[in-house]
Amino acid sequence: MVSSVSIAELSEVRTRHPEAVAEAAVRRARRPLVGDSGRLMIVAADHPARGALAVGGDRLAMANRAGLLERLMVALSRPGVDGVLGTADILEDLLLLGALENKVVMGSMNRGGLAGAAFEMDDRFTGHRAEDIERLRFDAGKLLLRIDDGDPGSLATLESSARAVDAMAARGLPLFLEPFISRRVEGKVRNDLSGEAVARSIAIAAGLGGTSAYSWLKLPVTEDPDDMAWVCETSSLPTVLLGGEVNGDQEGAYEKWRKALSLPTVRGLVVGRSLLYPADGNVSAAVDTAVGLL
Image (cartoon, rainbow, N blue to C red; front, side, top):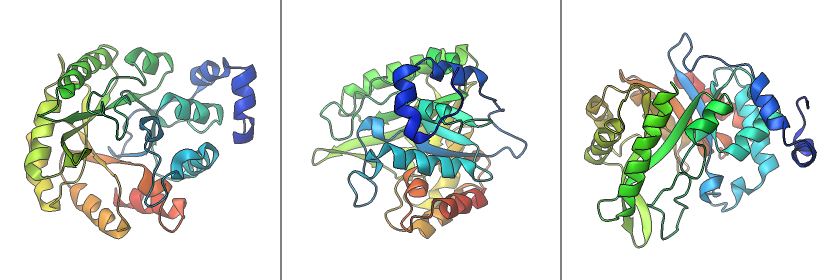
């Protein structure tokens, strides 16, 4: 059995003791998904598996794994941070580093719709399966559901997403669904953040599968933040807000999140690059500010 290791030792442990991942998963101390506050603050780090490595003007910001892990460990150490969302490689690095004790661990399930690829909308489930999340004693899963009325690939994603809802519910595991109405503009997939489009995406996602008992929603703030009040009335499912890119306006993003967090169904935040790679480089301050919004 291998105890917690340093970032520099990860490759050596993976080479000589691959069983250490399973051992760390078995002994990891767990916690309830939602604590006494009823709120959730999750740091997201599943972008690289979709080939999305850019942050702002740096196209390869997330390509340095040691740097990403260092930022994640800082974020996870801050008071009020409940857990992390990631793909198997990142979560297993964090397991070996001992950074996931008493944290909510969310496995990212479908990462096949690579950013910029011709098949981007046919978003296959190439990440965690329900049985993997159960086996590793993780706490929840997350899937991305982009729906383009003009792309047949969206139907395959819808069907596989419904089956993922069923598989997670059969194990009593929460599943966070991140839906968008999308379309291609000059060859690039763009998400429609109008109130009408977000409401439609909610209605579609909430109805997937044979039960919604374990389904959550992971939603963007609409183009007009005032629309969020009626948009969130589309479903009774508990909701977390998607952070997304802030395009240099960190304070503006905080204000939009603050307003939406007051809505009855909104339970927290899932934020990635804007907290891990803030413009001023201060991860602790960015995370603490986001936690303060809750």
